Structures are given as structure tokens and as C-alpha cells.
Image (cartoon, rainbow, N blue to C red; front, top):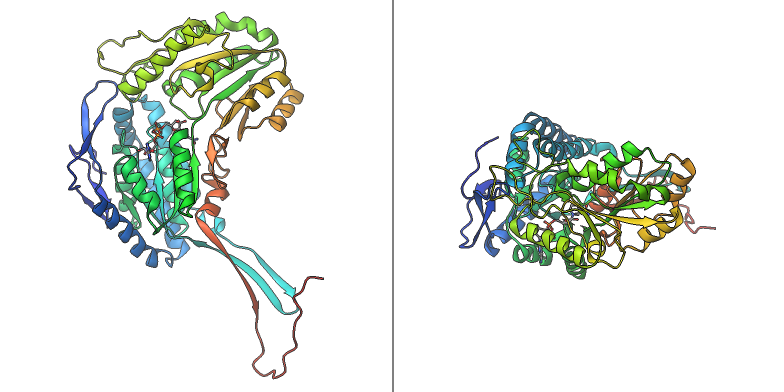
Length: 501
Ligand code: NAD
């Protein structure tokens, strides 16, 4: 892998890394320093069309490439990703500001999906049944659907592209990736390694840009399926536009994740996990805990939560003492600061305010420190909106029932967790909660790739989720065959009645 960052990012079209002929370029900056790392093009319509045509042409051969060959590319890709994990993580840290450990984790969670994709032979097996009627057998195949596309967000520039293209391509599809324009360098490196693993020309294309480029892909008749991860308004737009064009769409969107803390919970574990899950990665995780619901006596833990949170510090990714990095952009920082100001105006108790934090040596970083609001009510904007920063809201509930009702009333349903020593409380919570991913004494319950990533309600639009068996369903079409074979020497064939009695 080439470890240097080009001053202008190329695109992967027809198996070649080519520079865009566009006149509009955006800057990719290091969010800790403000330094410009590279420029990313707004891919032109002609270049996008070339990527779609090439992906369509490549599909003809790729869909007939034996499953073992497809699986072996994934095996080689997994080995290359592991070999290059540290150098990839350095690039990822530079363009996102994530701590080095966090950056390695971003890549590792993607590597696990590639490992899962390498099992494609068993994942893509169909079903069979002998003698569904006299002498008649029935069997089904999962077949790839064609050209698929993926639109990814800034906050996991390795993991989320790797949720998509390895699974889609292992299933026999070709894929066009349009990564976030805020941190597209890591996705380019991922694509470079995929080509090095032996992917044939045209199987993966990588284009750049923003809304205009996404809309081109959304509306293109040769694109059969769209995978999206990002914010709620954009997710809705992608789902509505894509399905209107009669495409298959899975759109993973924003979140507001609650952790319920019961009074029998292990106090140290609960508080440590509240802090790590709320401010880790500067709160820029779709599964971050942004609300803790304190039930009963735990409402007396405010001072302890505040003390635990106040020692957590942002910093540059090369500082081993940094607990988390900056926000991705100055605009993201302004948005978060706006919410902190509004929370105070709306009457929440701001126990810890990270608005004015600075990091020595990095005056131009998009820093926001840990921020804690207590006595938040459900009508405040710091509760209703996804802030996507290191801001934690504390709400009170009298009982587990009240906590469940609060969470089920919130429109988002990505993740939630409960901290308790009671199996009965945990069982009630897991059964009654209307959220797709539930942790029991686990703060961020992201499923491993042999399950699926299963957000609900306003956090997901579509039917089949990411990775696991559901991704195989999403990226394939089921063909069911009913077969009868005649002996050539039998002249008179009996009519077989297929009617179900
Ligand atoms: P975003 O919605 O701004 O951008 C996501 C992608 O959509 C980018 O590639 C961007 O170029 C494109 N895009 C932006 N505006 C568009 C428009 N008007 N039309 C078409 N395409 C457009 O999201 P982001 O800020 O990059 O990422 C953060 C968001 O992603 C948060 O809301 C977070 O919760 C969410 N997220 C969700 C999950 C999940 O699994 N549910 C995972 C990670 C992130």
C-alpha cells in the first residue's frame, strides 16, 4: 500500500486510479490542526457514468466467477488489511482526529466483516427439498443482483465501507463506493488494498463528491441496490428517492441512544461505561450513549458521574494520554456548541461545560470537552436532537417501566443498554424495548458480523440490515426452481398433481 497521501485524490474507475477532470475540489483537513491533507474532487457526470458502465460490464463475468475464487480474494484482502492495519490507522487518525487505538478499532471492526465475507460459500447456500410432489424436486439459489452502490458517513471511514463492498462483492455483485467527502483518504487506501488482493478490473469503483454525485447514482437505472449510512434527513431522502426509482435500499440513519441505570447496578462499571460510551470518539458514534436514564437511587450519583467525566480529556491522536479527538470539522464544533448553549437556555443543569476547552499546541483543532447536563426533560432540544458530540444528558425515571416508556417514545431506535444486577429487569427490558440493538451491562452493543447490525425506527429505513445473513439477503435475489425429469424411454407420462390438498 502507498502510505503517502496525494495532494489530489484520484478515483478508481475501470480498475485504474485516475484524476478527475472536474473544476470543483473540496479540502480534506486534519481536524486537530486545520492542516489541508488533500483535495477531493466532485466527480463529473461523465466520470460517474463511466464508473457505472464499467461496473455493469464487469458484472457479466464476476457473477459467474466461482464462489471459491470470490472467497479467496476476501481471504487475501483480510490478510492485507491486517498487515497494513497500523499504517491505515495513522492515515485514519490524521483525517478524522481519532485516537490511534480508536482508529485501529475502526479498521479491525471492518476486517471482521471481510472475514465474514470470506465465508460466502456457506452463506450463499440455497434450500432444497426432494419430492415436493411425486418425482418433483424444488431448490433455490441466491443470485447476485448487479451493480450496487454505497454512500458512507465520515465517522467510521474504514468500518462502514467495509460493512458494504466486501459483502456485496463476495455475493457476486459489482460495487460503486462514494465515501464521505470529509475523510475519503482511508476509503481510497481500502480500495487500493482490495485491488492488490486480486479484485478484477471494474468489480469495485470509487468515486467522490456530495449530494449531486449521490443523486446521480440514486437515479441511475443500472444501479440495482443502494446502501447508505448517515444522518436522518439524508437517510430519508436516500430511501425515498431510491425506492421511488424501484431500487432496493437500506439506509442506516441517526440515533439517540439511552443507557438505563438501575439502583442494583455495579456502580463503578456503570459510571465508567457511561463516560466511555458518551464521550469516546468525541461522541461521534451512531451507537454512542447520549442519554443516561437514572432510575431511583442512582439519581444520587450525579457528583460521581461528573467527577469521572471531568478527568477525560481530548487531544491529538499521537498523544497517548488523549482519551478522544476533535470533532470532524469547525462546522460540527459550532453545531455542538450551539446545542450546549441551548441546553443552558432551556433550563437543564450544566454540570460540566466543554465549550471553552483548548488543547496545548493545537490552537486550530475542533475541540469540545466532555459536557454533562442533568435534569434534562424530554422536550429540550439537547434531548430531542442528535448532537453528535461529547455531550451527555441525564434524565430521571421513577421505575424501569417509566424508563422503557421514555425510550420507546423517542423516535430513534439504534441502540440501548441497561445496567443492572437483576435478570428479571434485564429480561423485561430486552423484551419490551423498541430498539434494535440491546446491551445488558454492555454500553455499546454493536453485533459481530455473523449477526446483523439491526437499528430500528428512525435509525433505519429498509428491511434487510448490514452484514450477517441479512446482508446476503439484501445483495442477492432468490431464484426457486421446481424440476421434474422424465425417463426418455417412457412414452406415456402420468400427470402429476401439484395442487396443495
Ligand atoms: P451525512 O448524512 O451528512 O452524510 C452521509 C453521506 O451522505 C456522505 O457520503 C455525504 O456525502 C452524503 N450526503 C450528504 N448530504 C447529502 C444529500 N443532501 N443528498 C445526498 N447525499 C448526501 O452524515 P455524516 O455527518 O457524514 O455522518 C454522521 C451521521 O451518520 C450521524 O447522524 C450518525 O448517527 C449517522 N450514522 C449512522 C450509523 C448507523 O448505523 N445507523 C452509523 C454511522 C453513522
